[in-house]
Length: 367
Image (cartoon, rainbow, N blue to C red; front, side):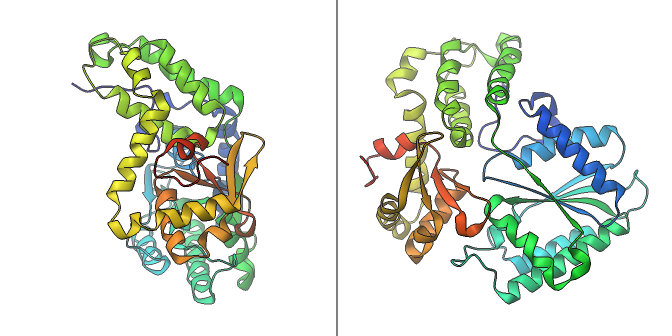
């Protein structure tokens, strides 16, 4: 039996899930305006940036794409994302190969190309600067994409986490014609009203679906879920994944066992289970490095008054090679997210402060 859940879990919304994507109506409208401005000026690239895990991919795939497809400005969608093995050079070659094979001109042939997570192949430069060779590769890639846009082959969007957006902003300095070829759209965390809509509307639709397709869930559970993440929006991807796991456990035709859910520690308990799974998926030598990172985080952390969560400047965390390796893995698992408008000001934020207060492997514990 296929179970249709009200949230998608720890993944972006897909192109086919636009009708379930909510809470971002204002931002989608602004992004659409930026896209239309880009389309009117040949050779423009639109950079979408914001905190890690803020929902950039979902915005493009489930927010923007369904609209521009109906407008018939583009006929196809292509998301290009780095693999684990990619560096900037190999990823650049792959982007060139994919875009180079595209035909263009008429809207019936044009593709919306979304080059996503390109910051994953930048690495973690400690001084906030790219090496000359890396900068050159990036500039050449941008030049290629600008030319592809000028020739009408594709509408090109680039998704990047906030601290790395400066690299794209600064990279064209050696090529003056690129200076006016990049437009930037910043995506923030959802507003309070947007977050409420995002949480409640899918549930309302889900409750009306056939019971034999989705089962029944106590509404109290969703109030609990809403309360956990509304206080800390950065925990949304991790909470989504946890929700997906909870609702996929047991008989989907029976009512949700809220008592059992509370006994397992609720949403926080389920999050802790996920962190354990992440930890045990690491090789032993990486597991042994975790205390180094946690001690560095504890020493560097400060309290973020907005959401009462712990943040730490990234530079001290990645100064130690062992801690840097753990940092990258926690970032990939969405247990950490990045905040800040440039690398030197970037902060690492825990997805949920209480995870590290209650996780038995944590040496952070009581601050």
